[in-house]
Length: 213
Image 1 (cartoon, helix red, strand yellow):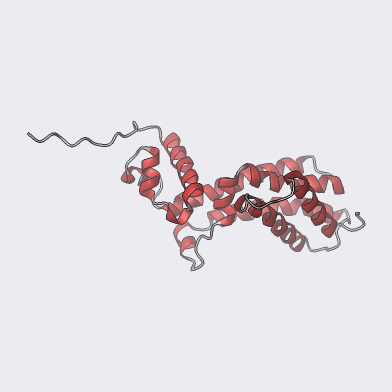
Image 2 (image 1 turned 180 degrees about the horizontal axis):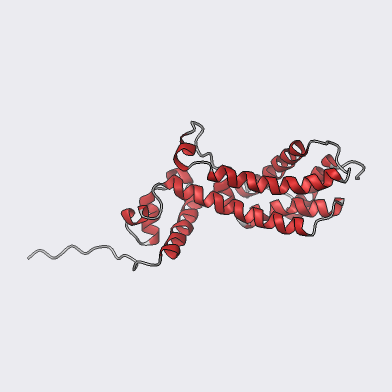
């Protein structure tokens, strides 16, 4: 007599929101461990303990999962930028603290930062065709919160340049460079991390503000 085939155990069906969070958490961990482009929806489903078709009930494609992770990462950054602006005054010291917000966000959320900022989503335009403008708009929203802080400093007459977008993009790129290197090349023999971050932010601040030593 042939024994019946034993099916792999599946987690009991949870509430939609809870299961959706489980999928996103599992995907983020797998993307960090294996790389976004090598992870399949089957692997994500297995990590959650559901079937691949069950995963598709929540996310039609891996790109949709990636897009949602990007949006969530930018939402965290927006929240932190808004908190920084709430009690911001245009001084050199407070400006440095505002720059530090970006660095802390990236280093405290390295997996989310990788997906949002460090993984190419496709240069042929097909990624945008599949997921729409939501990830890009979320990123632009975070950038604009930062630009508002820079704008206050410009309005106070403290910047070398009057072009808020140009200043903000320059600072954003400089901060991203530091954060992405510390995440991607953690094994490099960096100097003490806090000293490096403070020095980097100080150089960016001096480049943006006039009359500041």
